[in-house]
Image (cartoon, rainbow, N blue to C red; front, side):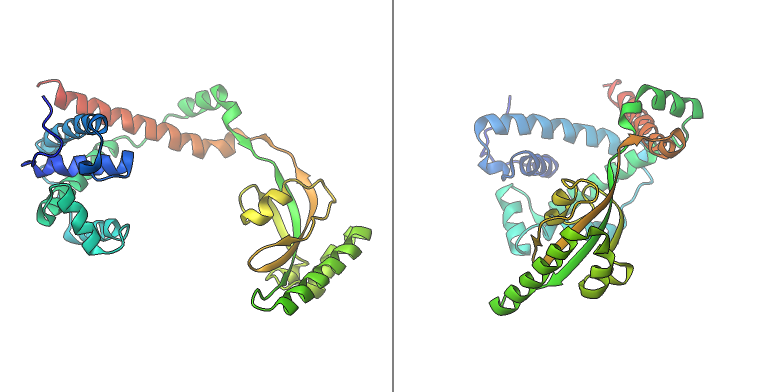
Length: 286
């Protein structure tokens, strides 16, 4: 039978996991959960508490210690997610936790992570034939996305000065007008007028993949055809022009290029399987 939601909890480890799951899943304190939410979170927290007890009682955990600097760094990274330490301590109180108990539970949480990492590290190899088989079975996952070879011009503007902003806009509009007649002059215009750091290279951005530029530029670059000049693009920095020199179509990745990625995928799967098998051995005797 589940306890009443608001009754005081005497197990700080359970309170720790209740708080953790409530924040992760609902962005709430456990005391703010609805009855239905609380039942779900309580079940998750109870299972995790029991599992952690088994892990920490195992032979593998005997010599695992979390150094105090690691604990303090982790605690600090958690506290920085809140307005200040006072707000964090108030949250602990809402969740029925004293600060010292939270610190102990956090240390144990880190010990569990360290034990599982230790178990995972016992698997370090993947057979070449496994990599080849995975590649042949999942070739649609290994594509080199479409890329663009592009050039760029930036004219700075000053948002605090409408006069300077208008002057910068007039300049970039004039540059674009000339380039629409002669796109091949983009490098010369960039060398002469661009205020971007790559102006000495004729504004060359090199080969660009989707997502590598800021949001304002990325979508427009990948909407251009080869040889097209973009419209004037405004950003916080100023006014931009892009020139799509060439489109490199998406293509299948070679086995040699995909191998390192596949190795990581398969290694992680094998390490997770090793952890599951080890945990099953802990749980089964119960």
